[in-house]
Image (cartoon, rainbow, N blue to C red; front, side):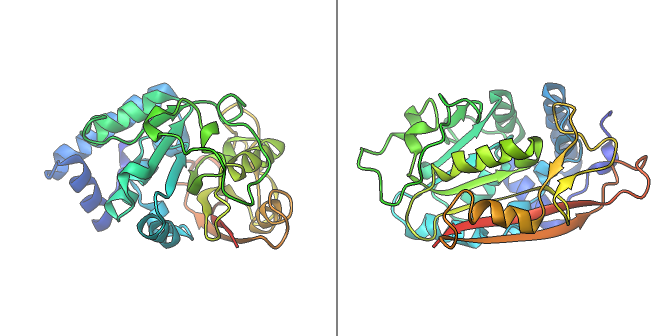
Length: 291
């Protein structure tokens, strides 16, 4: 579907954030700048979240449960590592840094480096002015992210230097906070379980360590019925419910009773799909915290 400028809308906090991060104070110039970045990203792959300009929203900071815990970890835990997987432009990382998470302890990862480079263009930064390491890779490739047994005690090997990472595997058992938004719903049910186990293997065994994010969901587990609710491979989108998502993490990925799962469902207005009559859409905001 073609891009539609009418989806551009920033509230006061979003406008303040984008002005502070880009350095562009003129609102007309800022809009033109953001839409140019959107167009560049849409050429790489036409994800609906790009078309809807979700990268200008502050979803992680404003409605995702566990965000305050993420910031607390960054401020209080020595050398706590924060990984944003499926980071796209890195907008959520930049918000976390603005709110106090130490920049030197953050790692970004996505399938395509192009999005990260567009993020530098969007936010008028460089790898020197914004030195967050980016690690490109496929989360289903064991050479990049292998599924390993959960850690119940800290790793006994030296910690890797984040700037020298070429895959996420050296981070097994070392990551204090993991963010994954608009990510899980791209994949089938079995693949979502695989990804959950892969991310769990990265998580630090220290109580309070957290995985959090958001993605498309339904009140009841199953496929979206709308004809255009397809994932990026053209297959019908599988969605968890808050109940099935909780059961996945608390019992299948982690031993039951060893994590606290919060999962909240929000109905969203998909004004980008007016041709789908009477369709209803939900997003789930969630967090998984080790006890």
